[in-house]
Image 1: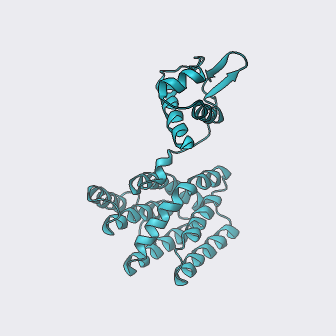
Image 2: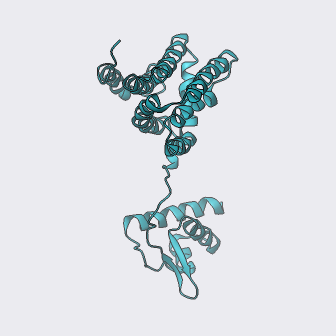
Image 3: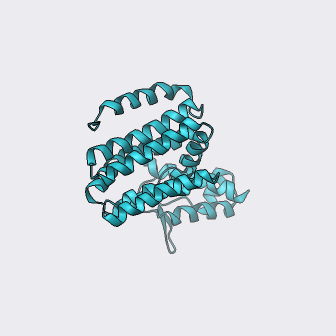
Length: 252
């Protein structure tokens, strides 16, 4: 129970700091004052303050107390943990991924080495093998997109995609679980992956960008059709697919 209460208190104090109610340089109330005002034990207060210290939001000054720290010049990238808690939030991360992966695929088409194209081909085969074995293929799917990031020759994309994976993994389990229920979904995913690979192998940046974006938009549409996303997103997903069909479409 201590952990739960301390989490709540830490969240309240964090909100006060982020809203400006507690400003950099302000002294936090004493441990005893916080315990009394929030109706918790001093143990709970200590744990909550420790959480804020670990985030760099407050700092102790010996003999003076605990003060709100100035905002750091360089903040670590982080997403709201709620991203892991709902399908809707997962869709938001997929939208972030859509913005990134179109350009990543285009750069990969321009820069991929022969070795990287061979690695992409192996990754594609690994996805098919996982599905044939009855596995969800999530790890293999993530690996395929990771190799595309590496093929840009820009290590920052590899790091960024690696960061996103912690949020995408559960979402991908949902999407691949939905797709496994229908053979037409599985066949579509296979075609979309192959289209991305073939565009990169052909050094066609325009086609690679189009197919990467199209793959993610259609994945969202499959969630709608499978009943995973509520009906309010049905029209938006369908509209996005129609727009993707005409925007930046390669000559066929």
